[in-house]
Length: 132
Image: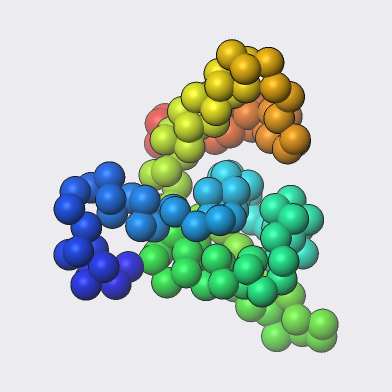
């Protein structure tokens, strides 16, 4: 992360939001927990435009949250995974998910995403990370 941006944050919450506060950043982080995905897989999962997805991935890589591996093949193959720093967000993201899920329940609204199927996988990743 840019140290000047970090210095401009007034507290750790501001710093966290500066890293994850992008239109698709939290979705990208969420989908990368415990696995490596290719660019095309992330594009399908997030429904982001190519320009927006590339921008968000670049910022997350710059901030040390994700790893990007480019394979020199034709067509180009790019894979993304979380760094150790990115994996530290797992518990927080799960709790954010649960909070949002409660909001949907209270308001009796059905979420439009397919994230609910992933919650079990995320909790397994979190438990694995806590054991190591």
